[in-house]
Image (cartoon, rainbow, N blue to C red; front, top):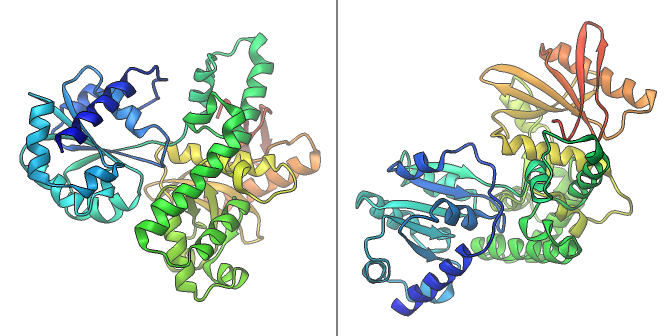
Length: 414
């Protein structure tokens, strides 16, 4: 056990010696670390959760355990581990537990450490940590920091441009970078090596399906699970229902489809957006729109014969709204009017609709502009909201119609 922990210390020190882009965060690191509550960093695989935790702790004396390690899990002995941590990291102030959900009964062990007064930072790639384990055994004992792939702002920072202070000579470069980001996404491993995007994300997608879904849930029919994942990634931004998917994919039952859809959400791979309705029962019955955590997965896995920049832009706006803290089924929805006109995103604060967001890649055609403007205004009338925005690739102006003012903004400004 001591050898395993010593090897992990070498791994920790090597990781900390690398140069990193400091990620944007609304959290004050010092305040976060001084809090006695467990610091839970969640998000998809390979978005930099471990890196973020290491950067938070860079100048601190901390112990490190990585549970993506077969030997550690195979020879697990909690008492022995704690004794070895004292030997390897004398006088440590914090413990970083990386991908801790791989340990059976991890929540009970973490709860015990918390009661012992240990200052814990834990990472995990599974939303179920919050919906079940974290919400039961560890209720009220943790603070959550959710991480996603690079935002557009972080992608610009990586390329040494300030998204909020672009000089005129950088306008063309910013359009090229934005197009690149929409097509290839923001996974940290590929932002610096775009030629690896397809192969890397293809492998990562398959790894998530196998390790985080099939293996965790003992799924026997992995073919059906994979077929569903491929269907969803190819139909991103479209409404889907479990009933229709069951027929389309020839699954054994609607319950199996629902179960697999939930499994695919757990590792933050897919999100399902509900259609807004004041009546919860009707909202539950309506089809949900499916979104992917990163556009790079679409490029790598989706079956498509043409670029669909409109949907890629819409998907990226959804991910950005999620990054800002909007929660599906609580504060973000889509909406269809009585005349079947749609607005892409309805944002809610408490019981009040605070903003409607429409996404349209290119509004240069008068016909397209009329369609998008009429849709958002009709939905605004029904939802009694006058804070309206249409997000485009590069268009910026204001449209006034029927007493409404609509801000048209490029994705870089949004």
